[in-house]
Length: 484
Image 1 (cartoon, rainbow, N blue to C red):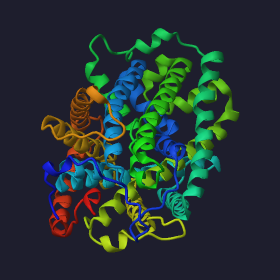
Image 2 (image 1 turned 90 degrees about the vertical axis):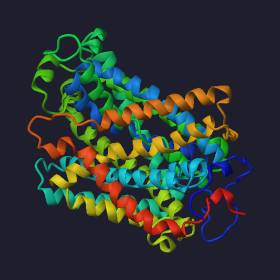
Image 3 (image 1 turned 45 degrees about the vertical axis):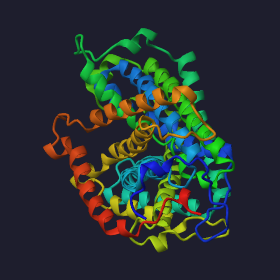
Image 4 (image 1 turned 180 degrees about the vertical axis):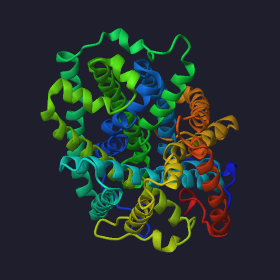
């Protein structure tokens, strides 16, 4: 019960639950399904579209180099996650890894940040998908409540898809991936081959009014791009549902990040080099440079198919993110680590899905949507960036401390003699990125609480979390990997 002693974490003989008890998830995913889920969670379309304009307007075309910087840092994290997932392949990813590596308090902290960060992400993805969907049907300036209503419908659709079962979810994810590959790779090739108007040297240019320096603007670009390469850990969230998870989950985590990272960098370079009158775009710093470029270069007929691809990208990412966060809720509830754990830990349906945990994520994200457009929503939504990075840092720091204390025992996936160096480097990267994202930056026309929104949301949710943890801590069971 309670806090797990670090000295008890060295036993490598842990196994995924294999009985058919009321808390045991069925295995319905293979390597390709786990890879597809992680791919959809990161989503090339979402990763590029959501931050392209922000990065371009913050640092100019050279913001492109933030992609390989962040990809390199996140690859270190993915490799560490691969080792952790191989060692402890249980539902909940960061929660299980941190708890088994360092103790209950560590695991609970990671899960709290992870749940809030991803649940807020669900509401933003549904809201963005609603915007594009309404544009598909010719509604150019929808009211706030119409957009919220459509977003709620998208949450309902995605939640139903996640509840129906793994086979239906796999079909949805694969179909969306095919659309994303076409929308990212094929369009990128067409732009580079037939519509490149800027020289490759443009990728090294800053903003028109910048002279030298530019480090601060690149740090801002790195912070924006940091949001794009999140979600690869979702393969670990469904580990108990994956065949041979000790091998398949690490490969899915690392493979999804590399695949999406490569596609996003290719697409970003293609769009930058195809932007007509780039100087005017950088001076104006308004509008949507991605859709404007595609419309100009490929014609107005591309606009509606482009919007449809955006809808598919955001909905598929919604499905994957909800799958990941619901497994974190289920994993915590199974341990008695949340209020209402007895209900949230129950499985339902012929495929034994965590239906109540999925439903909870839908209800909470829907409640957030009711505040869309308000200052409270704008403050909270920024935690969708900060939350995952904190959740990533806790298990990586725990793994680093385990190695420093000589208590690390690898699983079937191991980095060997490079493991320590990679783990320490990943810890340093995450510490840097957390500070970079958390740092308040002046935004013209924004009130002070928006500039400090990262700090405000972190402190506010941290206080609430401390209260909830204090009420639940006494009844938390031992880690699942240590149960007989």
